[in-house]
Image 1 (tube, rainbow, N blue to C red):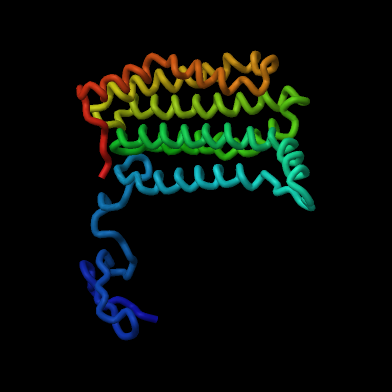
Image 2 (image 1 turned 90 degrees about the horizontal axis):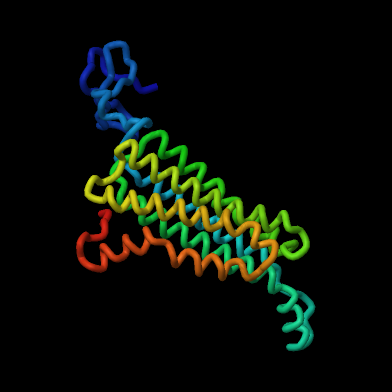
Length: 253
C-alpha cells in the first residue's frame, strides 16, 4: 500500500508504481487527505458552473421527445396501399398527439434555453425547481398516449393532458421567479426576465382556461392555443425590443 512520506503536510510525492511522481496536496501530518483551501470546493448551495444543469436538462428533453415516437406502433401485415391508408387513418389520433406533444416539448426547450442564457449562477432553489419542471416534461409522453388512445372517449384523459401542459408552464414561471428574487440572472436582462415571467404565466393560463373548451371542441383545441398565444403582449413586447435594436440578445460562451 502506498503511503505519503512522513511529515509531508503541504505536498506528497507518491512512491513506486503507476502513480509514481504524482504530487498530492493537502495531506496533514497524520496522513489524512484534506483539501488545501476549503473555498476551492464547489458549493452545492450556490455556484456559477451551470454545465451540469444544462447537460441534465437537455438529456431529459431528448429522452422525453424520443419516447413520444416510440409509442407509435408500425402497422403489420399490410398487403395493399388501400390497407395501408386505412391503418394510417386509424392511427391519426396517435400521430396527432405525437405532433402536438413534439411541438410543445420543443417549444418549452427553446424557452428554457433562452431563459438559462440570462442566468449567471444557480442555487438550491433553482435546482429543485428545475427538477420539478423536468418531472412534468418527462410525464408528457404518458399523457400524450392517453389522448392518443382515449382522447375522444375518456374526457379525463384530455383534462390530464392539458393540466400536464399547464404545470410545465407553472414550474417554468416559478423557475423564472426564483432567478429574479434570488439575484441569479444577469442584471442587464432583468427586464427580459420580467417579461418572460409574465409571458410564461400567460401560457399556463391559456392551457388552464381552454381545459373546459377542450371537452367541446376536442381536436381543434391546439388551434385555439396557437391563436391565443399569438396574443401574448409580453412576448410581443420582448421581441419588439430586440428587433428595434434597443438591446442585444444574451449570448453564453
